[in-house]
Length: 233
Ligand SMILES: [Zn+2]
Image 1 (cartoon, rainbow, N blue to C red):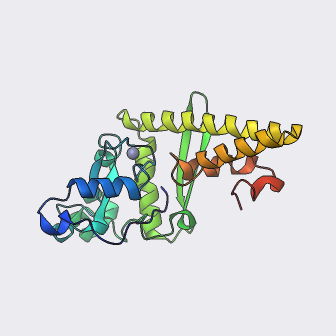
Image 2: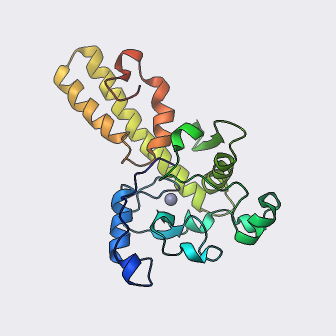
């Protein structure tokens, strides 16, 4: 999950119609979120559901609230969010509203990268994805970590495996590009170094798929003297 800047002005159809899924809403979500699912950070190709961060069934006043609308893959992500209403830990209010006690992080308002640790480890033919609150007492971050952990790692249905495979595939691309940067740097091929560096920076930019996880995973491989140059400070 990565911090996103939502455009401040709500799309017009939220005001003028009773729909929350007008073309202007979809287009704006697609643009503001870099064409990515807010839950897994995978590209949607424009094929996404409009998720209500606060569920529309229990927060009817927020059904057409621009700040409550997020783009998410359907089966693998939106449909696999935690049913907080069925969990004991949610508290009475949480059970009633299908919303955890303390709430969830909002990637358009909260400093996600500062509050949520996200990384993955490579295993044989798979990866293990981890989410943890940076501070244990940060309840919204802990709830969000739990939800993202479920979406990425629960293998009782196929969605999580699809996400992990896609992260692994993208990571291999980024890894190969970093190797190319390093070779060009060591060989003193300046033109190649500059070109490969620019491509690498695009692959780990905010707009790129899985950038929060991949930046965390590749971070340690970048030598100190190239950190600033490659945008890792
Ligand atoms: Zn997704």
